Length: 275
Length: 310
Image 1 (cartoon, rainbow over the protein chains, first blue to last red):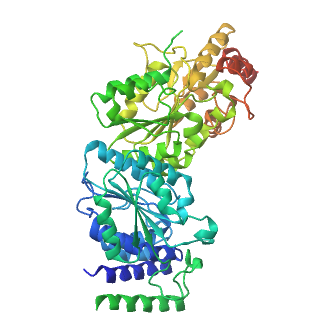
Image 2 (cartoon, rainbow over the protein chains, first blue to last red):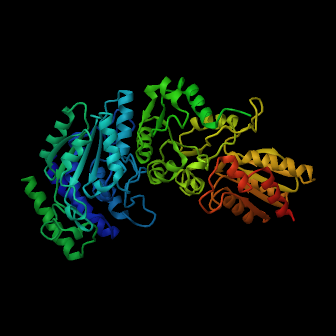
Image 3 (cartoon, rainbow over the protein chains, first blue to last red):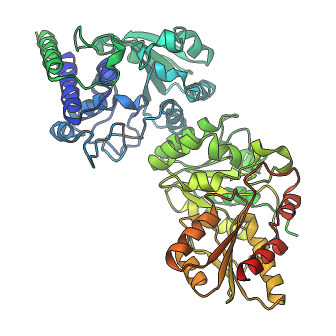
């Protein structure tokens, strides 16, 4: 399977969900997509067939607002029916809520309020270590999310307990609702911060599946420390000039005209990836 | 006077049960001493996790462990675990439906002299308002043991509040009627219903004795299960009486009194009077002195009952 092409198809599904549901955090969906694709299609031992396997890898979507990207990837992996998701996303009474909910297959934990995923994953990684389970534990956080103090409580405990079965990814797209992360609450020294808490830190090109995969492989070789992958991404990646690197696409429903422009761009990139 | 505090009974019960069930884990936030959990931590280090002074982390980590098949009991002063980590209780425990038992130690005004930062006079209201969260305030050591054993048998979230000090026994080793989520009827009467939870059950029993001497017959309910509230027991008792008095170590809003008033008002309207802490920082003093000052004792509750019946 050509995963880069799949990433653009998943972005198209995200766009369709958001048009149909009239809501969605589209910018972060597009930036985080390649991280999720890499995790679900190249890294994690998880599928609809081993949902109850105690040794499965565990994932928590800490930046829960990028749920549309999460749904698209879960559907591509066979957990959800994409037609059903697009048709019902955000609709009255829908199971496809605007943040992850573990009543849906494949979703371990509910999220939405930021700064919860990492501490929860610390608990999972600790429990797996206690029981000698082989599953690894992953979470994805937004860069704006790192202003939450609970992230650093989790980081502290992960370092203290040397949780090398835990890998956190930061979707470093540098934009949050109010603008540039460096203006809102600077965190350009992420390496130093995580290392000070006893972590191994790696950089990856966050919209490049090969680069991400290498980083995840490297993380597995690090013993005695949790790893953070700082994935440099572009907010709105794949949406073309009208969308990429623009803070006002944090949460936005495109007009029909924009929809067609973005769809054309996604199709073009998918075809280029397939060549 | 009994010298064993309810918190100590929780530790003893978990130490018994962990022998059979290795999935039980205890987590503390630098609180193993105040939780009376030091013996557990010493005897079962492989089932114990120290989180440091970080209550949000304590609750989220417990939720993650529960997701991996553990049965976490996490301990922190009630004032902190109920509000500092409120959102973690709401999202990671209740909403995600993880098998975490949150134990609020030194609840209410147990830390009387330490001031409002250390009082939990809002925990019943806060925790009860979360969907899928249960709230229990056991009254004595025998009931505490039954409650913890029952909670170990289910896989749902719960908040348990205990006080710091030993409390006088209500029940005995041989006589501790306990049915999960059913109030215990300590005494049946015809004039007034006294409903208490936690440390206020004992004063309700004393109030009933005072009233009895004055020819007033009282029912006493031990409503250790504040949520799910035993509405059936309330309706049954209130229907046969002229008034209801509630007593709780909690602010006057959103606690046992508010809940009982809702049930009585909707089903069998009667006068309901609440005995509770004031809507103000509580006066400095140990629990007994504070309770006496605010009329949260047998005499105070008996006086309220007579007022309600007048």
